[in-house]
Amino acid sequence: MVLVLDALAGGVCFGLFLYKWVIIAAVVLTWVSADPYNPIVRFIARSTRPLWVWCETWMPVELAHLSAYASLLVVIFAQALIPATLHSLGQLLSGGPGVDFLWQFGGHALQSTAVVFQSLFVFAMLILFVWFFLTLVNPALNNPVVRVVHVLADPLITPLQHYLPRTRIDLAPIVGLVLFFLINRFLVSPLSLYGFEQSLPIQLCLY
Image (cartoon, rainbow, N blue to C red; front, top):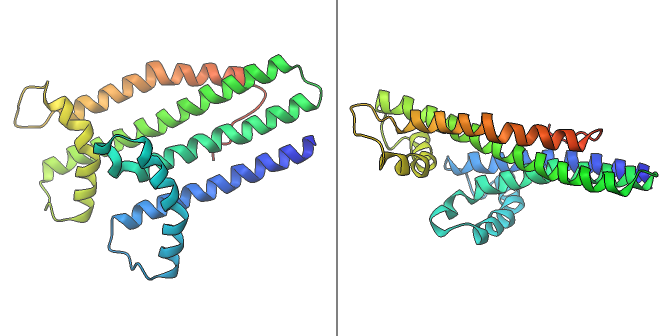
């Protein structure tokens, strides 16, 4: 049974890894005018749309257009949590104490949550950096990449602009970068480390 659980954990880890890249491909296709009749495009759409719709039902209406990115975070969380939990269950069935399983599962959940927030913050910092660079070069707004970056950056920048003084250079992206870095460094990273310590000797599937 233990070998079955370990093999299942490996299969789930690899399967979710592949599905994560299918979602990334689907997100990229939303940035361009992909042929909807192309069999590969249709396969990617059918594979990812149900999860996008499910995420939309749990998201605020004003953020529903970000459901594709939310679905990617859901898969990252599942890829980190499910295989590690299966490994811990196998360890429990092999004769390990039940209290260790509970502590490990809590560590897996905490570390998986930290991984999601770290991924979110890194992505947000990347978007803010790109947006700050774009404000300096003033590109054409009809460029599809510029439109995508604007849609993603607007929910991050607009709240900050209400509290920052107006200057020739928009300071909101820089302030956002600093805030996300500090939150990740002094809040999320310690939580991730604590979860890692509780998860030992089980390692999360993070590739």
